[in-house]
Length: 302
Image 1: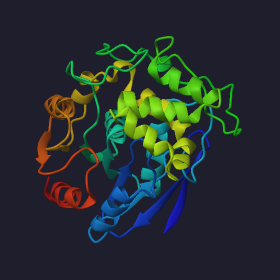
Image 2: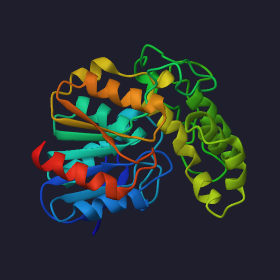
Image 3: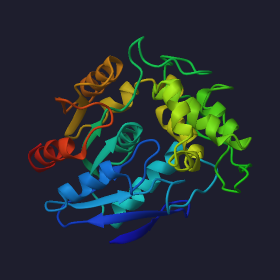
């Protein structure tokens, strides 16, 4: 069943609802939405035990995208979905969606349990060195650190594709937004994939020739949003994590890069009530079938 929640700024946020039971909301990472097979598989796998809400984050799929962008608006979006779910809910977030879920849990007491898959914080020197950003920054610098100015739109006319300084002129997120504003969506996708996701440049070149490339370009404006969620240097927000005094589960893949494993351990150490598990045979592109039993055990008994 498909429904719509209205966020605090009036933005419509569209979700699919699966199953019945206690409410569980799924938060996607970069390049994904409610139609993505991984979290769709998680939703259907957990539907016998939970009412699972799988939603399009703002700027994706059927959801709206009201300018100006700020991470705080995405937290309000999640709160709106939780309200549609009845108020309090459990939350699972993957990759940068995990970072958004953590930021939301630090602000929303209605998040009663939280699980995350590999939030990509940079806590070791082998983490990606993002262009035009400051590795290992001390943290966000107020609202400006997570905001984009809203007085522009790209050639498609879609609002929200606007550059901001994220607390540092010329930051990685601002560069992504500038490329989109200039109509260079493919360049923004390539920059994000090579610099942040560590996809080999030659593989990205091959991907450009595939039919799916157009789908990636359609989401290019949201890549600056991911940078805003992660903050300058993708630094670990240790103080905010320490304030999340609810049961939490941090998951990593055995085959994921060492810097992601270090980030998972750091997140688990910063959360007061967290467990940390490593899923055998899994890389960052985790299979839904590997997530479902871990999430079921945690959300039922954790």
